Length: 156
Image 1 (cartoon, rainbow, N blue to C red):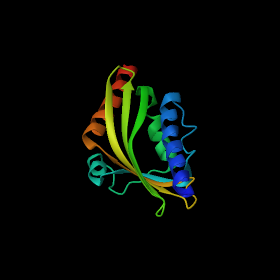
Image 2: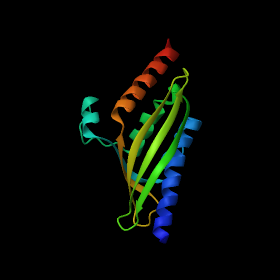
Image 3: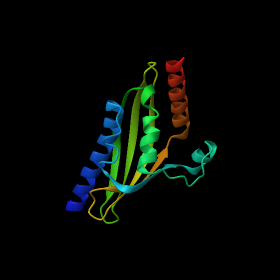
Image 4: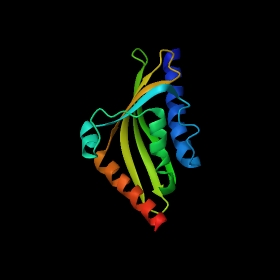
């Protein structure tokens, strides 16, 4: 195993640990720990974005993504992710991680969503500079509806 491969694996672990911390602590402090300042995040497939009223090439900055995650905090009781499989290409400084996200909302409802996260790294492998997340569109749409419902229940 090359040194760069090991560095990329550590960065992947740090990135996904920071996401789990965000929802556990309901704080975005660790949000950009493993990402470059100009990192972009894109949800795929493009049809999911179009179906939700966004342009198919919609990208979020770190700040926009943090705001999006923060909007879900009121609905969250517990969330954790599980890495199912990771493939790292140290030569191209990229990786793909298959994730399962186990989520329980404050109203007791729970869901598991799955996604494949494509990551591009800096030359030294210590930061993520681009993220494209292919999501299970049916379950993600269901999840977003559940979050909206939980927040409405809290505000009722």
